[in-house]
Length: 178
Image 1: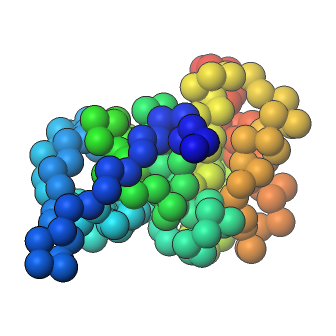
Image 2: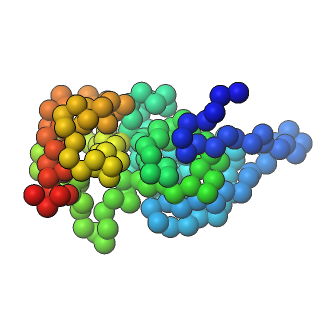
């Protein structure tokens, strides 16, 4: 059996009682807040975030990983939360777009996307910002090729990408204090 992707755990077989699938306990941290809850084993991470934790900044666009609107960080790595079961996040640290701003202050990434018009309808923006966060966390001075690679799994139907590239470049400058 192939190994799961980095940061993703295998899903244990669900126990049934009278044909119904029993909820399973789940402990995880989301945006710095610890949660101990029970979930249906087939619940997707994006559904947990949006429907149970009321963190609606993570969007659902395609349910196939193609669009990237559901991108979040799990243990510091981007994952498409529409194809990760919530139970695979057992013990994980999850960061959503709501976790970027601290004390109500916009981050360099959020400021740069606004200033560079790196969004139009905004549907893809949370996923793009999370990919940008991961990129800049490991590479504060990315070149054009590295920026393109970092957001390759995200689709934007509005902007034509040029302003998104500019936003990421500006975010890198702002984060470095340049």
